[in-house]
Image (tube, rainbow over all chains, first blue to last red):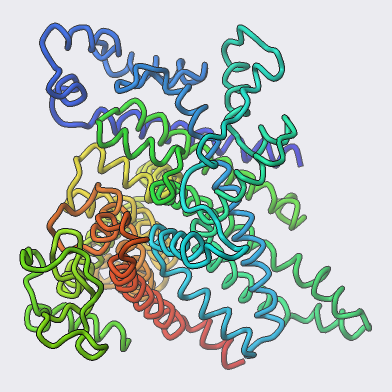
Length: 358
Length: 274
């Protein structure tokens, strides 16, 4: 197993380097003078000189790339032009929400998708099967942002006098605020990665609430995330449901399942232990691939629900031509995507011993 | 197929069906009236607006109808571009083999390491906002899918006997590639391309929704949703109708793609009949 993990990690290196190279090159492809492009109307020769010097744009492209790589390993993603703050600070501030949203959406899509797929496969050609497949086909065709708007309309307005009412926007109820964990833990003068980690955890609302034991705030925060998570998770949920159904149906037709039944195993064991485990590989693959769709969906949904995550910040940065932020955020999201797919690869080895021995 | 046929019909005859110009401002009408439908009791003396009037006093029904043209164009143009470039890259990589194949495929791996919509957003940020740039970005991020598909097809057939025979008969590389090898890739390309059109329409709508794609006053469904997203509580119909249009179009291409895959993939046909 360690060899298998080592090999996968080695294979990851060129892709990671490529991802870094693409994010580096893409910003350098902007036509025209970078100073004029980024500073816009504020660009004067004197200001441009300072600007080029400050962002190291006077050096050769190879020196710039080398510095970019070295800085990145230290967690330095450059400085935002708009906010004149380190991009890593913005990441610590914005990424937690996007990750919480993506994880909740992943949970929703996996639990509901696998559940619907299994029911569908076991009750093939029944009413439930037809209904599930209609839901899956329609769900996969819905624009995330539109579904988000519809959910907000239904749960915040139509159901406003019922117990199902949910907030249509924001991270938590106006006026509420989170405790800073560095203050809570009495840690002062934090620097480097420690500061980033504590700030990151402070901004991860659900974790912050668990640490500080603020359950009222936890519920409030969770309520604000339910609708966005359902919106983001619907497309992956539909795809997972379809994949689970077809994968399980395929396995259920195999000889060893007939043998398991013939030797008198109860149906629960046949499905749960024999069929489902073997049907899991394509399902896990799809969950990995759909992480990309979840991350993209999170970016779109944040705009609909006015959530201060990476997505809203990235769109703002694009419109303001704040390229270091665009670059840093794209890189972080791509890294998360690559790492999730690595985890998926590693889970194959757990699910199918043959892969480990390959 | 019925939805798609209807969609193509609407796209072609939009100017004849639409009661108004999609960009015309109706200065005499009140903003965001609920839809005026004569059949449902709207007074006959009032002008009929089946989907209501949007925030800029334009007839939404006409805009949604014209939006079908743009969405079909978006899907076909981006996928046409991606298939063309993807086929060239895939065929070249498989045919050349060795280092060239390795380099090209590693580049494709890197492009696929990004969530596609996010890479498209980043590309738009570099190229500048606008529909053409958005289409180009969606096209670029879709290339690897087709390049891989064509490469694997070419690799699987290039050593087969009939290709060897063609080579022995003195066929040029181009002739063998285009006449003998690539026709094998057409079926999977059609299936992937049809499903890709659905994704491209969704992605283009998403970029326009974020304000990075089509620019006002273009009748683009994603842009309509972006412009009216704040009216969801006061005039939900302005959000519902363009969304339904996107959903039906994407659904039509998804179903067509699935149907084509089932019909054209002999393995699936066999397993169904078994």
